[in-house]
Length: 152
Image (tube, rainbow, N blue to C red; front, side, top):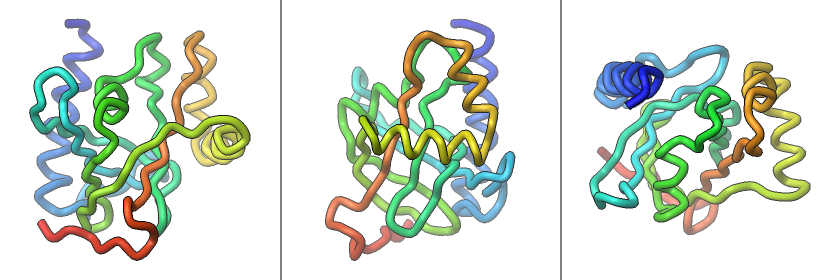
């Protein structure tokens, strides 16, 4: 395991413990962005996997994540997991709800990416570090905008 991976896991575990226990009310913002707790199902293990991520766009009808992995040449594990099973749980601002993930493409991705780098320029630097196109992930309710939040 790379040192970067070990540090990321340790930070995520600590930050996640506080974030999930407070339902996103503590440590709910970082670098001017909302912090979300994301739960995916491991594509190899079938186990619940939890990670803490910043969401440059967090609106009532959608949450947008960036699978940057700090500009690494690899996609983060959470991205592989949600591609295998797009139903995820997200904890944000005191609410946990089930959403469906998809990778933005074409003009939608271009428009979102422009907005994302305006919100946090670091994502643009991450893209410069790697040859892969960093995925932009859109999380939306499965049943439309009227989907009810889950109680935890």
